[in-house]
Amino acid sequence: MFFSRKGGLLLNNVLGISGACLMWCTKIANSYEMLFFGRFIIGVNCGLNTSLVPMYISEISPLNLRGGLGTVNQLAVTVGLLLSQVLGIEQILGTNDGWPLLLGLAVCPALLQLVLLPICPESPRYLLITKQWEEEARKALRRLRASNAVEEDIEEMRAEERAQQSEASISMVELICSPTLRAPLIIGIVMQLSQQLSGINAVFYYSTNLFESSGLTPESAKFATIGIGCIMVIMTLISIPLMDRMGRRTLHLYGLGGMFIFSIFITISFLIKEFFGYVQEMIGWMSYLSVVSTLCFVKFFAMGPGSIPWMITAELFSQGPRPAAMSIAVLVNWIANFVVGIGFPSMKVRYFRSLKNYRKNDFSLAQPSNLDRKLIVIMCLCNGLAVVDYLQCTENVCTEMMLR
Image (cartoon, one colour):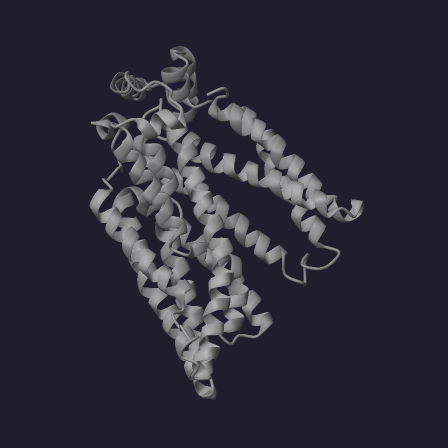
């Protein structure tokens, strides 16, 4: 690594501030190119944050609090989503004049981190294992633990260092080709895919449109979308104390199981509305079923699949291969995110076109398979089975034990 965890985060804030300022000035400069470039820079900033932040939190956390503190990363994400949803309504900044300011507000968290991060200690694991600066690592641990009794932590890091002697800092290509690290890498990739291919971002990106399709008015659909953000924040808060008590594996399976069940209800509500939409009473009931099922779907996502994949990848690897592993995990996560975000609208259009042909009895053209929702149901089931088969419990387990 050219930069430490803390140094990488500090440098990344320059990208965040630059991207936000470009988006803010788009309308003033009358340049849509600035908007595209600003969004690109913010995308790079987000990609680096999703790798560096979970890694930093995992490395500074005590063993018994690692799960709960790791969830704080997802809590910050959900709070940011909720704030953006609230600020984006027409009564606040969701207007022709207000949207540049809304995009420009992305500068606030970057500035806040740029000011506060210098007073935070560097990762003790990075200082001791990577740089061999034991005294600096001790100082960082004393600040983090608010205690001089840090020998147990130092010994645990030394044990990790001994366990990974043959796994010095490696590149992504070397990690992929390593037979000893292949299993944890596959687990990390499957966990990232279980998050994105569950279809959660199809709900986030197109929730307002989905609610309108289910029969809600445009105004009600916007507030239902804000309800999704509220559910995410509340359930992420609830999951913090449960993360180390129940375990990552259990919570992740509960989350995927709940998403599997309620994705079926979402599919049923849309099917009934399309086939029996002429019954006025049916439309109202199906609208309620769709909204409640979507909120429950999001609730179970926030219980585990929202935060666990990020911390699991950091926990499965020792200090040497951890940066490369996080880079691969982030790459897989965002590629899957992109595929879901781009693919969902086209599948939705195909679905409604098929239903239209079906109603006309043109069976040669009709394929009413509602593929997008079926895929969500299938992926939730497959991801759950993969987690049951491969994922070990990592709560209160040091890195040395997981490497065995």
